[in-house]
Image (tube, rainbow, N blue to C red):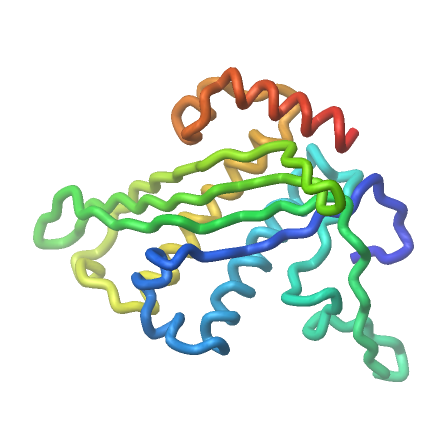
Length: 211
């Protein structure tokens, strides 16, 4: 993060899992430590995806952190002294609720299986001080995979890794379209649950606000 660069706006990411989704990963959500580790992992992935979006390159995506200080990201000086960096205040918050994950085995033979992975999330962009919602929609992602037959039954670690993969693609596509110059009807009709008329209005409101 270039702490000297001037940005138009600061974006902050919030990550939440709904209770039904947590039940699919009982070992990871059985205690606060492993639960927070999963949320942090998703938060860092989502932050990286949003940061690489050229449509908002003049804006800062604040590194994901549970609080307002980076404890794991440190600035190192030549004398090896380390200091923690206090995060800036956010101008916009992206609240994202993870709401679904499912794997379907479409078909198989003796060597491989044909799998479909689906994930879902509600993405909300809002102004934190006024509480004004600029954009909100539910999104889905479906990934098609051909895997070795040994992957027919997944343990919880494998399930979580496949969830990380499909949810990363969901955010990559969703952010590319939410912050695009013009809303893509083909994408939103297929992967969003909102009416395209509402999408256009929200897209215009968001664009006017952040630009």
